Image (cartoon, rainbow, N blue to C red; front, side):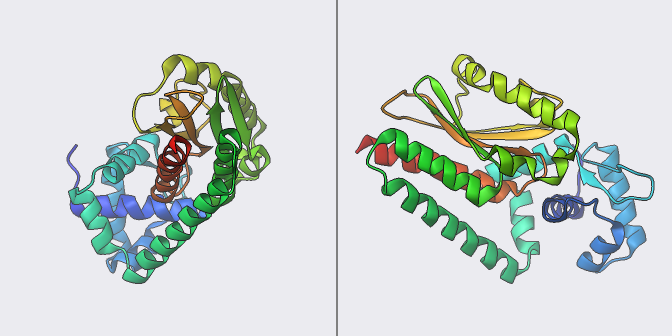
Length: 254
């Protein structure tokens, strides 16, 4: 895929602005951020739209990321040292980067406190899920033996995306089929991310499933993670879910 450095940076900013505001991102906002004209930004947006990485929901609206745009972004986050990642951190203001890192460290510490205070394996897993709900605003989930533990359904449905009854019903159908799918499919990566249409169940629910595999007394392939709208802070959520899986595996093996 032919994409320039500036186009990657613009895509990154659209994804992160949209995650914060839940509103399409316009060229004026980005022009101020990048110090260029709105016409320049519109031309770059047009290229990103042709590539299928962003879309314009309404004629006069700004742009929103597509599933393909999120996938491009997430793949970059998963690469330890990529051109995109370096561009991202070079562009983001140091104060914003420091604040995000500080918030992430506090979140990881909150996870550790919640889990380490539990004496039973099942309670530790539930505690980690409950902490993920509080930290991400998403629905939290984990497999405990042959059962799927869910928490935060009401938190999930307060997100602006779920004002549509059709989407709520689609998510409910996904949740009904999630436990048997996890048992049968047994995703093999340490961190698995299914974005929007990539979800093997509930393809039209417009949500992302982010799960970490870990070993527990119940199974060599236990899972913990979150399910939320495609619009979310992937960098933060992926880090928290990965940390939860690693921490549980370490604590439960002791």
